[in-house]
Length: 249
Image 1 (cartoon, rainbow, N blue to C red):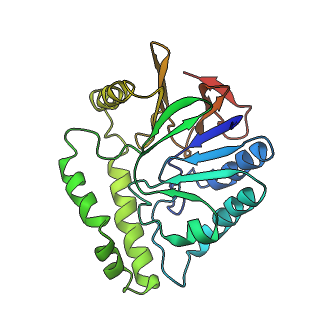
Image 2 (spheres, helix red, strand yellow):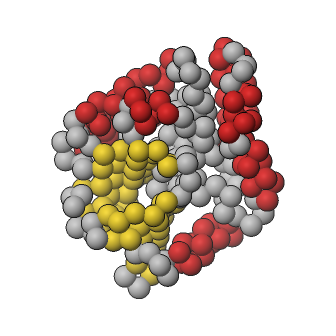
């Protein structure tokens, strides 16, 4: 049984955010703090703001993070990586070379005796019809192979431009009405699960419904929020900059 498990999402590494460019440093600090005590880490999407695997090229600014994840796997930590809407083109490198467990979509698992459903959360909002159509186009393996024909020196900046632009437009997109759609979807899923975990909204949230729980992991940009699960109980934490972690929710 996994004794201590962590969940994070939405660091969007690789894009310049004025005032928040130290997020990778603080993420490294967090990973250092859980090494040796965490049995597993679940990355619930959008760790990177734009990820596409070329056969012979990895973005230089991603090398340090990938190397750190590989070191954690070598130390015995189990790492699961769910595709988000910015890092959906996850190829074999992260699984075959880095040793991560890759999940292209949401998936169900059992953690500490609890039935857990995990999904990044993109496309849940009812008005997000256009994105759901675009998602099918972007995640098509043939279309991804075509994109990789573009030289990385062009393809990576181009992808980052569109990825970053869409993320900025979503900054204030999640109104209370849309957040309620996430809670509603979670409540429906809780009929067959004990815990539902989403990311994507950048709004950390923990809601309990009759002994079950919906958790949104929030983001690792401003507040550095994450979920922690021990003995079948899940909690939401905030690690703002170098302050001591505090429980929220």
